[in-house]
Image 1: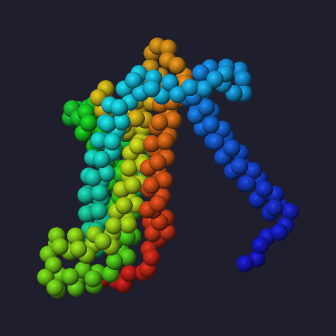
Image 2: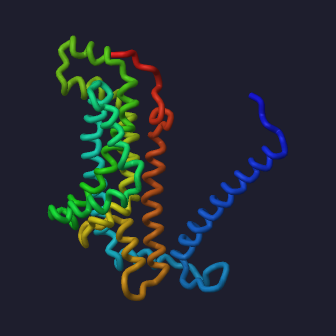
Image 3: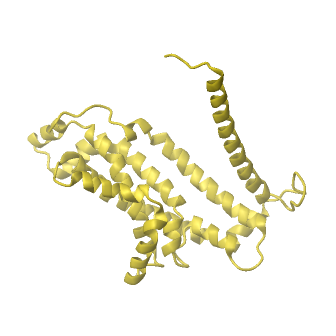
Length: 280
């Protein structure tokens, strides 16, 4: 491999690294500011707070009813993950194993919720949910989040399914396996890494999904990210440190699940096929 060692190339590389470094530095500075503020007794016009305390976390927990919010958040996440997995894996298997007219167009339609901004289809979707009476309810929030997550599971799972030789399934059929046994004893062990990767990424995505949840959530169906937004812009005087404590809880929750997801996700399996499948 020939490397370009000209001055222009070196300056371009230095500029790219400087830009990335500046972005990362600002990101960590913002996070450090929020975390520091959440432990500060008072922080005005100085480099460091006047003192340190953890009382803002207990204050945020009671003031914003975080226990109820977290329960709703994980109930929504659980429902979205389960339904997305059931629908997405089934649809991905059909798309991976069957050829039919309009297949490419159908795959393109699945891509649209992932490619276009959420607000583009979120407002019409919210309008439909309000007309049907689902908006403001738990299942309305779940339905809104399923719109991008089901296509995401489908697109992640198709390469995993195509990696499995159809002859393995044919052999299982020959030995008397019905559809249920074929899935449980043959396909599920082979697809488990892909299913875990897809569902963990759906979990992280649902925690961070603000636009669609905000448009359809009601007082008793707010997830953590929506509750954080309302706490910032709600009327009345609220301690900045208490809001920052709530933001730290949200960041930690998302970060923990993201780290768990990355333990299972192999990006090369998601974006490429491990081997070329024979025509069938």
